[in-house]
Image 1 (cartoon, helix red, strand yellow):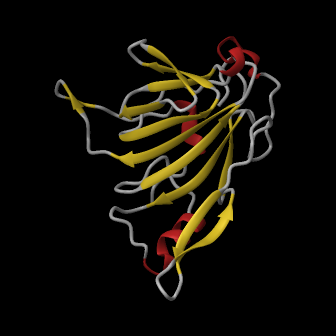
Image 2: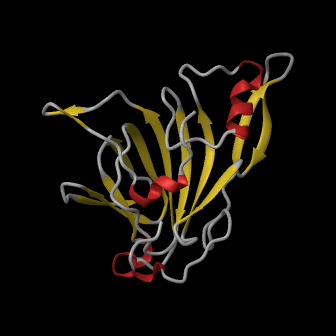
Length: 199
């Protein structure tokens, strides 16, 4: 998620080639299921099935899970099969996406909007969240944003822009949003090329 050097600061020269990004610990996901007796068991432990480098290898997205319907069909592990085989779009119509993003030092996203409700949690580091109104908030480890189809941009300001940081996003679909008679439209700027299109 690079930006022009004047905006991204010291992110220049930071390279990640896989998950986790340098300087961040490995994160494991644990998927549960049921045995023949109906008891809950762990089915798998891993780092996720889909990882995508973003920008000039300055960020990496790790898809922890996705579902393409609500309510979710858990029978015969059809949800697990789908999540493993299909890299999700930004969000699924009537579904969910859990996406973890490791940001290099100083890296910022472009201003973008998705017609969705996004729960953004700071896992490691500090981030500046900027809205298209110009309002900003600094978010620290454990802070959560509830973004309701708002146009926004993220900047990793961890260690005054010298250290990597990590965000976790849970993205759910939303109905059309109309403000003062105008229907809001989603846009991703250069982020669009990193997301598959919904089938």
